[in-house]
Image (cartoon, rainbow, N blue to C red; front, top):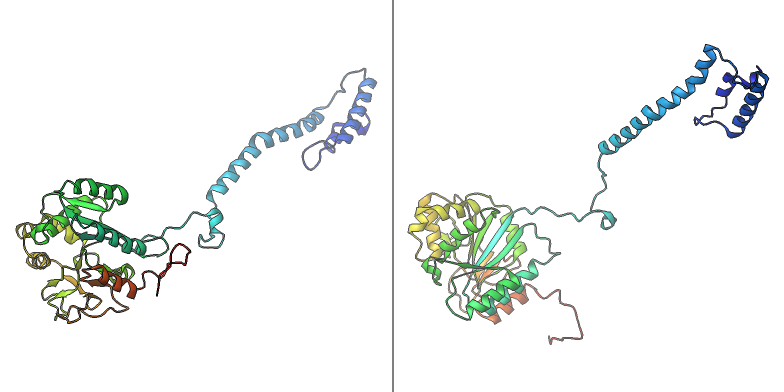
Length: 359
């Protein structure tokens, strides 16, 4: 048999990619056909070694197809799964194209309960604007702050219609059951006890009781509370006004904060339950003193203070300061306007053809 038609030469037609060259294959088939004619039209007889050489590439191709390729695909999948995540920061300029927004976990959670009366619709409207501006996106407070308006059960027909409208519109009202609308009649105790139950599944780090005539500057308040302990903590402006010692008496009722564990203790304490009626801020200090609680106490004066009257009444009042955290006794709209102007609350107002204000 001519060498060009031998099985050995067939192996030479296998390219590097495992396929037969088309032109060379046609030539070999023609040679085989001529050889078959010379041997009577049948396929030439092959020796055992020649048969092995013919079968070998077929076996190799079958092995590669059934065993090597599937494993290769499996290996690639494993490598993709094990590959480290992309280290591209979501804070880069291109993050808005593919990366989800990064949500920073707040340093702590604060609930501010503003104890007010159901009839004071105008005051709540003002306070919603004041705190809504401070809580608007872009202000980047390091804490999660919720503001709620708290009053006792409704007893007028118009309240039973108008307050539900507020709740539908804003969802920021807590109506307490089991108390009368009297600040010194047990309302603070009822509020703190209710909060411990209402938010038991998602507790706050701090709960603040506030009057409806105090303005809190939330960035300054959050910064001040940020360094406070999370447990057994009692924070506010000390009484008497002449004292700076938080352990002497108690924190003024204009606005004081308690850590969550103290709120839970008040809700279950016989001490608080048996002394719930009276001057509310004085009672809070009494509860903690009798119960041996509030060992971590912090005085925020002079940053929390009363509005300065033309003729000062006591040392709790003084002028506004750039470092003011809260200012109390804003009993009228002119006082609120004076405070909001000093702290530049309207700085974000843009000029428009729809309004013009005289200087």
